[in-house]
Length: 439
RNA sequence: GUCCCCAUCGUCUAGCCCGGCCCAGGACACCACCCUUUCACGGUGAGAACCGGGGUUCGAAUCCCCGUGGGGACGCCA
Image (cartoon, rainbow, N blue to C red; front, top):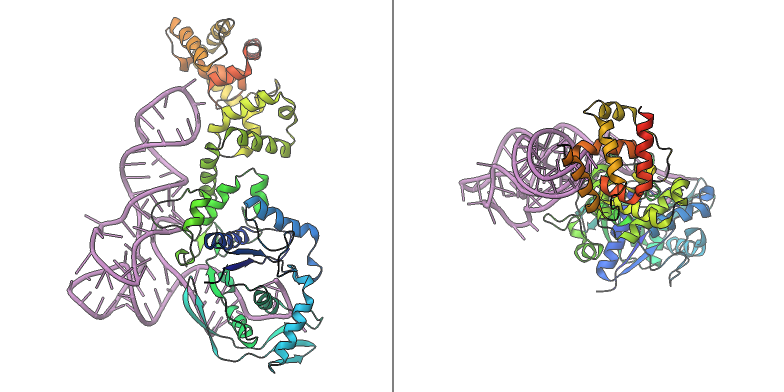
């Protein structure tokens, strides 16, 4: 069997849509699974709509997702150029060949292709046999001389020796046009595989650029893990059978195959994506987590945290790693570590101060911490428990007021870890200041 | 309107091709309980689906037909 050659052929619109990402991913997976070639081809025949910046959106998104291409812009290859705007000669040549068949004519300044009228049979690797008859002749060159999508798409697939066309189901109806062109040009037919579409999570229809969660750059900006997005995307329309969901990429590559792809559309679910992201975040190695967090603080321009001692920043992030669902929670979640000017939630204060005798607890705690060992969580825990026991109380009686005084909120990472990292001076200063302010 | 595709819990899905092991399994979400130093994580449990109707068959979620519903395509966009 000849080597598999698949292609992903986006047009540079300035956006990289999640549906495009999924199509790219399935092509990439199939290439990697079969030891084939993954080609990136830019379909930029549409006049002034394209620019370098738009191209970079495509390159950056694919790179971020880890979908490296074997042939295409930036890496070259034997079948280039890989931008359609640079392939005019190839299209002219194929147009002449098509003219030779007598199936081409001009009308209103545009160039038309005469259909055969025969039913076209698509032998689809996902859907099985699909039959469709093309009804009307169609334009292959516009009156401005530019070739049309259907034509360039087929010509390039022939010229680039593409063996498998894996694309969204929205192209299934177009395929009869493409088949007519392949046959008229005397080229061997590729294997088609039409993927189910991704539907918007609320309301009718497929996901579009304007829908919530539709753009890859948004996930990148929010600090999502690309491996989590990739794992989630795989599962939208494919699964290895059985119960497996979270899988390393090598495993997915090994198991992926076209016949296992679903035939029905799937609705996008951001909650499930968020869960997948959290699962990957929890097991991220410390160095990568800290680097990811720092990159996010930089994007947010969170200067206080960025100016803090890097070792301190690292400890804070690692303390919070098991507590968060996404890195974009981090700046707000950790703000009080990096400033004394943190806000105290008035609702939490009212609630905590109304229960028991929190002032007494804080005074006891402050006194105990004066000589406490801050080097480990266990040591701090022991001190707090001893203090509590001496007053016939438990750890929980100190927890809420202490957390309020030191962080201004009711939720956060482990109290002892927070104390240890903040250190004796800062913790006691905050306790005393809080007591003074609370009268 | 015409043509094409699809149809299992709210959502993603396993099972369907090769009918009985399925009064349908997993995951997300939701709820309850447990764990617990808050919040999470984790654990246990609950509720929740074979779109409808006809066939075929001893037997259908699984095969066939018709409805219905959902989606897509019908451009000198890609």
